[in-house]
Image (cartoon, rainbow, N blue to C red; front, top):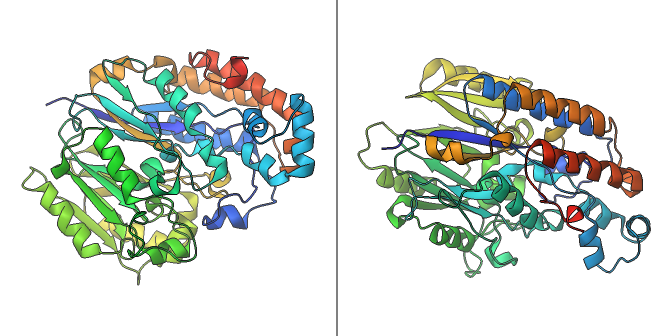
Length: 449
């Protein structure tokens, strides 16, 4: 058995972080459109969380933001001329398209990819499949750069296998790890890969939401499981409750979170909760540790409380056997019902023994909490040694990235500012410098011109 640790790779918030209300189905994103954002504060809030987890002894990595505004996407949509001219035309003719290609949404790396650790795969390598994110245009343009950054971070093909995104159509809508959880006795042991989907694309008679889109399909999950070479007996699929999707729960990680031998979820999270529990317990079998099903009742915490506090969009991290800490946003502490439940939970039972609160207001205002900001990658010591070391958080990288943010980021950004050609220049200069800090090579299209 390998001695493995679960690393968290957080997305570094990009210089164009703004509130444009692009994500239909994401209540916070829609409610905060037209407000001024603070890119500098957003990046620093994320860095503080990364550094805190590294200081707690967890392996913490950083994933670079994407090039934004993304001029190549505007060119593909028929805008011509110089970069400055393209920005001006897009701002005049299609301001929402300009907002979309300027989104800093890649910061939510839970949507970056689905990751299967080497303990689960047939070839004994860590497998990555970037999510196609086809349901939202502003996110559908991410997967190529995401793949390039993942390859620059996890370079060694002896340890890491990189797949292309699934076909970019609704039938294979893939939202990545926001709808994927892994349960295990230990990170080095074969685990259960738990895929949650919103609808069956090829079965129009099956239940699906009526108001908001089901972004992730069963067919996408099945394709990723095949590509990663997973053991079918250790893969469990469950459908998200269509009613909670229509209430604003656009990803499973807004209403459930899992880690190790614990599944922490809301009573209304799944279409068939009894089957979900039965399937997980059957796959778990007679492993050494008990499997904990921690179901939060609606009478204690409503679905609306979940959406506004992001109780489940938290990081559930193992410090030892049956000893976990829950990383939550400050909004949980501000919600009396949620905070009362969490205090009762910690006082009454293992394995969740502590709650830590972080200020992530800038990310939360766009609908992304602690869990949205990180991609989990279980790594053996050899695999960790093969990771690009310039991407791993430590005192030096924390200082360098804060200095970099201070140098390049604005304190205030409105949607109208996205047409400013100076913002494009500032962003490219920042990212060019960042690739040198993090030893990524030329991962951006502007660097290859």
